[in-house]
Length: 173
Image 1 (spheres, rainbow, N blue to C red):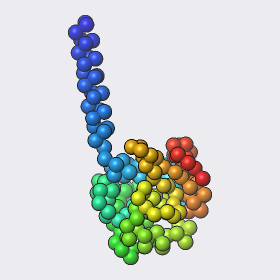
Image 2 (image 1 turned 135 degrees about the vertical axis):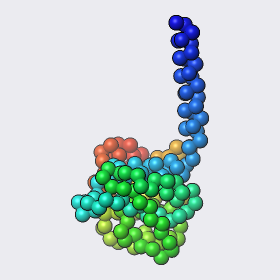
Image 3 (image 1 turned 120 degrees about the horizontal axis):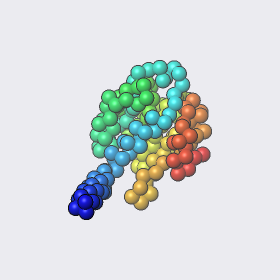
Image 4 (image 1 turned 120 degrees about the vertical axis):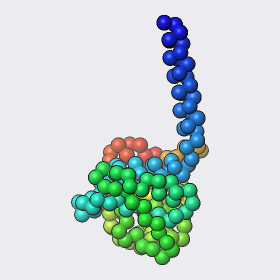
């Protein structure tokens, strides 16, 4: 009996070590992509937008974040399917449900086209993006990734954010 108990404790200890090691290896861009995916799961779009079967996520193909977002292609978000649209320089945010602003020239043009409008667009700014309006701002605090929410911008864009998401935010304005 003691051997079985000792073996079980040993297996659990190894599993815990493996989990810590695997967790430490998660890169920042995959974590940002996971946060963005979860933001979409806790956002409610107006009926005209949510009737679509596609959830169009627009981003520049800027390095590792673009690659991490592309790995989510085809995943289900509620009743919609995640589709990544790569923005090129001069692109607009027309047809996008989510706009990832990362400071690249491609998203700079798209954000300028989207800012004046009150279209139902979830604008997410990454930590390396320039200042400007957004619904969600990703923030790095040491080795942690946190986020702030501008709920008035969400309301202006006719987006409903879950109370669960609001409670998890570092700041809500």
